[in-house]
Image 1 (tube, rainbow, N blue to C red):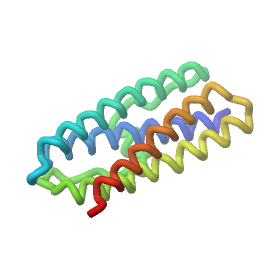
Image 2: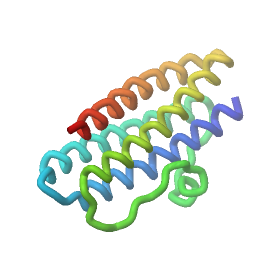
Image 3: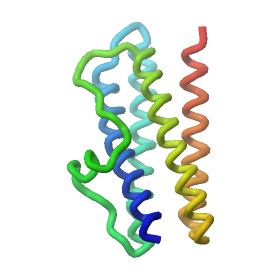
Image 4: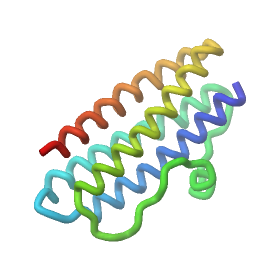
Length: 146
């Protein structure tokens, strides 16, 4: 169980850094598709914010403590921060696909570990994230088609 909780806290760290990244993109999007992308990015970061809360509560339900400081998150994340600069949607989408793929791989691994120790509540939560991340990746890729 200790390894599972460590993985969950790493995912929690990833989600917190990703949340900030999404908000940064939301504030700094530029170009003709500003209005549509601005709204979509807000949708993404609201979705991630909900997942942050769910995941922290999951860790608590397992009798452990979720990480809670920005330093904790930065020390335990696989997601890279973005710069404070204006950015085009095609660059944002490419970066988001990579980040969602990173998250997807991590939740798939956590699901396998959860199933292996019969922690089905965690496994079920990871199923819901798998669905969301796969759909977001697909939609982002579709939006980049010409």
